[in-house]
Amino acid sequence: QVQLVESGGGLAQPGGSLRLSCATSGFFLSATGMRWVRQVPGKGLEWVSGIFSDGSTRYAEFAKGRFTISRDNAKKTLYLQMNSLKVEDTARYYCALGIFGTENIRGQGTQVTVSS
Image 1 (cartoon, one colour):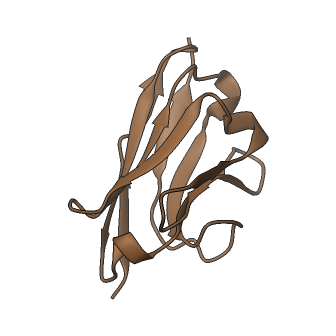
Image 2 (cartoon, one colour):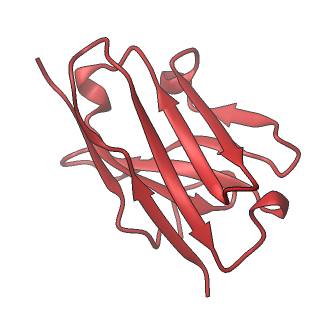
């Protein structure tokens, strides 16, 4: 059974950093494309970034140069390093199978709040 458990969210100041983690089980992370998706308050889900099984990555325009997606196959964990955070990055962040899109979100997510 596929399980995805996000963690690492919290309160950060504008310009600060956070690293989100997604612990996975029930499938081979090394063979699976993965993504991060977020839900901004009052808005729909928004695709953030994806990583192919070969390690190549893709980012939404707002994430380029600030966010880095990565994974540790041995630890079965997906990461999202977020730097230079902005107030508009405040959202609940979810990891999911697949590389693109906002469908099939099954985790609980982790809340990121950026505020001074």
